[in-house]
Structures are given as C-alpha cells and as structure tokens.
Length: 444
Image (cartoon, rainbow, N blue to C red; front, top):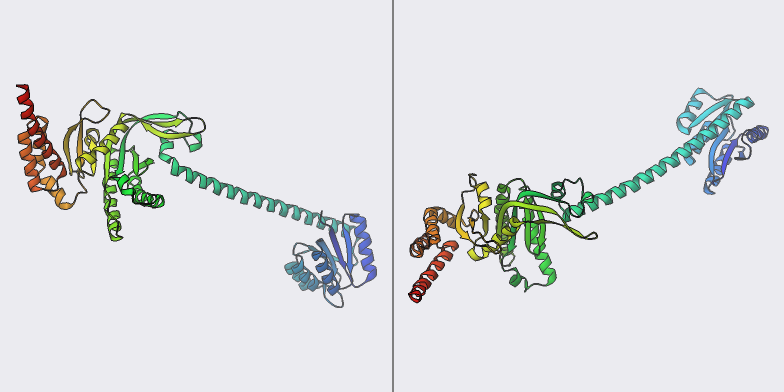
C-alpha cells in the first residue's frame, strides 16, 4: 500500500509542533506527518515525496509567510499534486487571496488563526476521508474504463467473428431457418420452401486453368466471383455456395429476381471481359441455368462439422439446365417453372422456348427457354425477328417433321447466322433425315 503523507507548512515552529501533535491525536499513525517552515521548503518536500512514490492527501499551510504567501504556495503545489486537498490557516488573508486559492489550488477549506482544536480535527478528518473516497472512486472508474475497454475489444472481436461467419453462412439462410443468429442453428434444422435456384459455371475452365499456376488460378477465380456477387445480392438473392468456379445462388422473393440477376451477371461479364481484353487476356464465357420449385433448406453433417445445403429435384434440375447451355451454345437457360413466373413481365421479352429435353435423372420431358437479353444487339434483334418462324420450326421438330423443321431453321440462320440454337437444331434435323431412310429400308 502506498504510504500517505500530510504536510504542514508554517514559519513558526510552535505552530508546526501544535499542528503535528493535534493531527497525530486525530489520525493516529495512519498518516505520516511532515513539516516545512516556508513555501520553497514545502515545494521541494512535495517534489521529493512524489518522486519517492508517496501520496499526499492533504497540505495545511499558513497564509502569511516571509518567502511566499499561502495562496501562491498552494497554487504551485496544486500543479505538482492536483489531487491533493488544501487547507489554509489564515488570520490576515484577504477575500481575494482565499478566492485565488479556491480557484487555482483546489482549496478544501480555510481556518482562522488561532484555530479551535475540534474544528481542526473535524476538518482534517473529513478532508482525508474525502481524499480517500475520491481515490477509491478514481480507482473504480479506472477499473470500469478498463472493463469497458476490454468489453469494447471483445465486442469488436465478436463483431468481426459475426461478419466472418456471414461470409460462410449468409444471414438469409439463418433467417429462413427462423433462427436469430448462426449460434442458434442446429444440426438437422430444415425448412421446405419454394425458391428459384441459379447455377452458373465458366465454360472450359479446366482447359483454361491449365496454363495458370495455383496462385494465378486463385487470383482469377476471386476476381471473377467478386464481379458476379453484386448482381445476385442486388437482386435479393444470396450465394449458397461456391463450387470451384461455379456459383449456386438462391432467390426466395420471386423468380423475376433470379432472371434479373442472371442478366446482370452477363452484363458484368461483358465489362470484365473488356477489362481482360485490354490487359491482354482472353475473354471467358459462362453458362447460367435457373429453375423454380420446392426444396428443403437446412443443415447436414455431424456434431463437429456441419454445413448448410439445399436438397430437392428443383435443385438438381437447375444444375442440369445450366449444363445444357454448353450443348446449345447459349449463355442462359430457364425452365418452364421459372418462365411461367416471368412471362407476363414486359421487361423480359427476349425469351424463347427451345423445345423439350430429357435431362439426366428425370423421366419426364422438360421445356426449356433461352434468355437472350444480353446477346449482341444484332443477334438479339435477329432472334426477335425470326421468333415466329423459330417457334414453328421447334414444333415441327417435336412432331418429327424434320424436313420442314430443317427448312425453317435454315431460314432462321440465313436471317441470323449467329443463332447457335437454330444451327444446333438444323444439324440434328439433317442427321435425322440421313438416318431415317436407312432405318426404314432395313425395316422393310
């Protein structure tokens, strides 16, 4: 415990002796009593005591002294020890001097000379008690500040962890499970919901990445994905997971959001490709597939390691449809389930059915639609112009009228040579026309 000292200052030794005796009688041995016979001696004593680590709860000083007035001493002592309380003994001090001491020296009280013993004892006892309380309060405040600082640091760390957790498990996922926070999510939590599922993938990524180092692969993937994410977030979707270069995103508000996000992704890709071309890199292509339907969203895994996931035929179909973009040479395909939700929206006129397909894992035929909103202007305009002819060609193909279908697809291509779907169907028609006569002759 820090030793505490009370300093008495007076130019009369008899006064100092009386003060010391009465203070000992009032306070016992709880405080060390030091004396000084003038202002300069007192200031030196204060400086030495502070340097040696002593606390000075109280200074009692006479006012009239040869070398320095009491108010000046207390003012200078206050600069050395601001927390120390001061009592001035005065028989001749002016109101101005007392006011100066109160204003500049934290004067606790002034006592007239000669003083009353009981008055002095009571004043000193109250002063040291007040100093003690102030010190306790200051210590408590310091401890509270430390606790608050530690809590602030802990809250900052928790906030960082929460933000980090959001990057791995989106808030939307937690909300869909009706949980307040990620810490409330348990293994096996699940909910059934109708959502639109968007899959996207970079075309020929394996061959594309073979010429890059692992670090270059990571840099490229992150540069690409960071440009795709805003299109999803801005359209009320969230990314369920990244699968290498692929993205799986979910949209719970409407299928329109999913289609709009897909279109926005393709626009962002155009900007990114321009940047790549300007820097001497080859442009990239992606495929986007969207389906809408019921799925189960929840957590799977084990006690020590679990993951968020979505399960259902709707999810599998979205993935299969995205894969079909490679076969048809298009950027974006949607299913009948999604098309039915957006067909009445006037903003999405650049959509056409490209027929029925049988996708892996499903026995029923699925109608798929091409969204060609982001095609080059001349290609988009060509597809819109030939749309009635294209629809008729698709109908003939489905009815096995391959010759009629071929003629119509050929005309679509004549008017719009970059229509890869028409080119794909024309080749199929030609193959079927070549096969069927041979097959019929064998049958006959």
